[in-house]
Amino acid sequence: MAQRALQQSSSYRPHYRRRFRWKWGEFGRVCVLIFYVLVVIAPIYWMFITSVKSYGEIVNVKEVTYWPQTFTTANYEELFNAIDFGIYLKNSLLYAFVTALTVVVITMMSGYGMSRYQFRGKGFMLGMWLVAQMIPGILGTIPMYVIYSKLGLINTRTGLFFMFITGQIPFCTITMRAFFDRIPVSLEEAAFVDGCNRVQAIFRIILPVLLPGMAAVFVFAFTAVWNDLMTCVIYTSKKKLWTINVILKSMIGRVSVNWGTLMAGGIIALLPTIVVFAFVQRYVVSGLTAGAVKE
Image 1 (cartoon, rainbow, N blue to C red):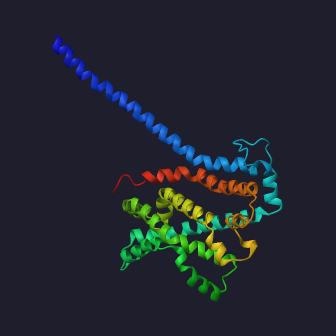
Image 2: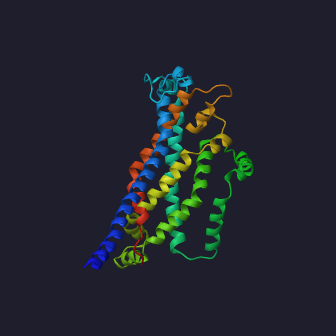
Image 3: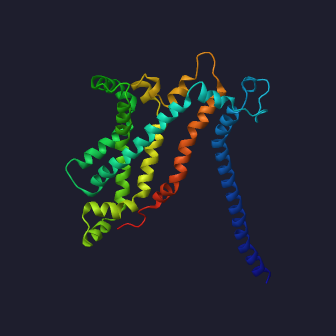
């Protein structure tokens, strides 16, 4: 009896230890996630409190405050009144939205063709697009500037749109092709049997299933253009064509920096990407599991 009781107790202890270790493992994962969230939020929090501090409180290195002693909107007022930040915000929104919508339409057609049709040079074309992603875009600045100069596209919105759109098409086409590959061909074949032609099958059957891919491509193109700085710096010198990134860069002087106004501009620059992702996040997340059932 004593030996049996000893065996039962020994068989019970590992189970207790496994439960104890499992709880500590969960606790460790939660701690890591909390630390990661704090690391991500901390810079944004510091930007915000700096944007609502007075200039004297910001530059006072003897007494660093982690919460504003007095809230002020003077930095935001100066941003829009003295610097005309609204003009550059409108330019950034225009460039980003138009580019993202155009890229979605173009890559839907090119991605469908790359997914559904077989033609000579298809593998080579995909390989060249992938290799092009490894080459820094700054290497093509000089030849592209010469071409733009001869075409008269310097200091024009048309030139900026053309540069933004062509820069996003290769990678977004590869991404859209991957989403088309996840959609079974049998869906289109069933539509053909029901009397639909190819265009009707695409708009009635494929596009509703492709919403996650369209959302992912839209978000990628939008954020890429929104965060772009070098394109406007290189291809335009007209201030009325600048984006918010260019004007924020120009606010950093050689001798002094108005940190309050600069941080206010940074906070406003964060908002559009947050809003866009908040609206399309469910499509992007659902796109991660799209095509889990293969044909």
